Image 1 (tube, rainbow, N blue to C red):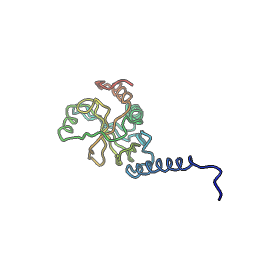
Image 2 (image 1 turned 30 degrees about the horizontal axis):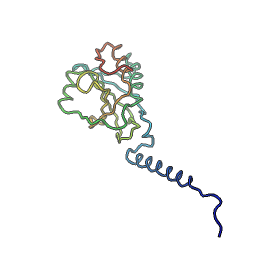
Image 3 (image 1 turned 60 degrees about the horizontal axis):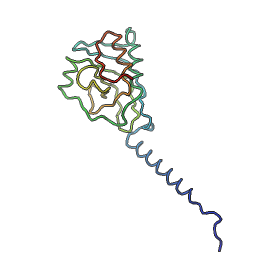
Image 4 (image 1 turned 90 degrees about the vertical axis):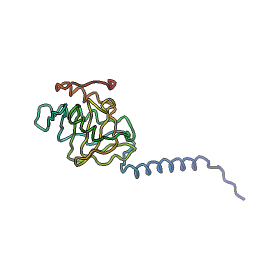
Amino acid sequence: MNHPNKIRVLEPFIGMALFIVLAIYAVNVFNTGNWFWFRGNTVNVRPSRIIVVDHGQRTILATGHPDFAPLVEATTQSLSELNNSGIVDVGLSEATLEDYANDSLVLELYFDSPVVFNTAARTGKPTQLLIPIEGRHSDGGLVFRGDKGNWWYGAVRMANPQPLLLALEQMGYVVARTQPSG
């Protein structure tokens, strides 16, 4: 009768740990539709058009406008890192959208191709983002997603909205800084 020289205990545990990690990763890829769900950042955040809605006054910024490039850079910087791994449970009611159109300061960002949020939540393929700067939902760095003129339920949260707020201040907008400076 031959006995093994060494009993291999470590190899099965390593194999089981690798299997568990791969299973968790695969389930999250399936749930989110995103191979990079674990990164907590945003890809393709350079808008092709920005609309600043300031208490009913709509200003359209596009390539060639003097404020467009600095605002795009600030937007890209603020949206590049997220402060949450899921969707914030908040929506945009008709009353809130009416408030945004007439009594608030908000940014509407429009993209030629969908924005990719690398989060553990399914965020869809938004081609438009709405960022409240002053008014309802403006105190948490929230970003609402949408497509084809419709705004979706749920928001993501910017890790540092300060570059965006500073750029708007430099453009002459009054920005209430309720967010902690970063």
